Length: 334
Image (cartoon, rainbow, N blue to C red; front, side, top):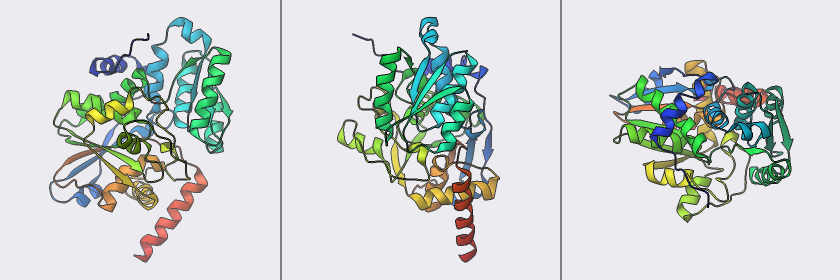
């Protein structure tokens, strides 16, 4: 029987010694307008993971996983399934180590993300109408071609890699007492929450899910992984399930996360516009769910020291411009 290795803070420190050959330590910036939204004594900072070389935080976990593989596992090549950002990360991390990479994606994944994976050296395989169906193809191809799996979130090395974000946050801003983190499959939230709580037990960790795909929240309610029908959303990086046999992220999130909130499409759109208008930053919808939660008043942060990771910048240009124009018009009409 395979030994189950639950990721811990030691694994996060080990990841920090491994990933920076490819990933970057990202800056933390003050967000004065968001701070004012929270009221007197509130300070909000943004962690700029969108400045990573692949445009998202995913490079941390992918690099840690690939660089921890044995020579034999590396020689076989790697395979993953993704909504895009993890696929980019695996493609770059594998290329930097001279390893071939296959990325399984559903037909819902935007074309620009597929082409980005190919440009980074990955081999995209597009199949099925959901991430769950792409995962099924990944399992089949991995077996047929004897490739080494690098899963998007439910893996100890991936979770530990994402946990390095918490190490950086608490080094850069020791006063932080609240973390507001996007949630989908849970690799990011599980890693950040586990590392942050182990280093600072008093810190408040909040997961932010989208209304059109609150899969982890529904799974926690059910006590087991559930499958929800995928819908179009501005936060397409947060689509997908938590894995039919989730082994790590659901348990870690149940243990370390204090609260959950859900945002809708209007919140995501406002967050994207706010990010550009006040910080000059192009961020994808999934990155802006925490900003949207603050703007909508769905979270109480009065007097808190809050950090939000801006998780990625990989957004379709035409979609982004449409959001900006719509929000600009609504702002003028208010």
